[in-house]
Image (cartoon, rainbow, N blue to C red; front, top):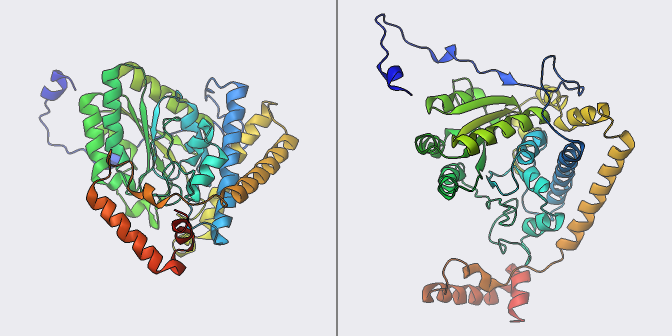
Length: 394
């Protein structure tokens, strides 16, 4: 804001209404894979396009199989990203591989795109001894330092101010990298969201705030969460760049993120992207969406499936075929199932690892509590069959 803007005056009484500002939605691809008239396609080569599509398919297959595993009692909890893959994979494809991602809990597509293996997914989901978190997190709380993907935290919005702080460090380092933090529109109701946006604008840091507006905060629809025109206008109140995109349009998400990253890195300016999508699956494996939305609504959004839209575009480019598509799904389903069967056999982490990684040397109090826990498990071995068995082999 310039001094002239601050000092500008009017002499007739007039309030500005919130509904006067309506932000349009940026779209590139129609559902049949053809571009809208006048839409400029992003510079996306065949190799990257196929990498994106394959990551979207693998994410869909992983979600399908792991929800089935949860229903079979092989897994305690799971969260799908079905219907939101264009957003979760598209933004990651537009980044530098060393840009930091601070996600919420539905961005497994970004990890797939960056190369997180099926083994790495399964080890975390089963909390086995190969899990990077050593079994101390519930399923879907992934993290990978080598892939610059911050470990997920359950409480909503905690990653948003952390992203601003991390991006401030990147600005000071001058390494030409940025941070992207992803969250749902429900998380944007948390105070952390507003603190993060204000701090990012004041300090001018290279951070991208990506809101996945999928219509529901668990069972609460958007129209019961806020009265304004979504999340995008909020960024204007903090003096930052903002855009709303069709979150089911992979080319729109990709193009918007490419430009957002340029603004963040080259101009040291924060950017907010609101991706309009829909959560076709339940909020989690513990949720039943039939209690708060209709089948007709779900069917309407299912017809806007982001995987189908990108597939049609690839077919039109003659970069893909129906036979290749069928083969890809078959291979991914086989690989996911085989990896699941293998990784669920790995033993759980050692009990001692519960108190490592916080202090250089665990203090006496933690050691005492660990011994009390061991004594408790020995007393009730039937309640802790896996752990008790490992205690016997200490």
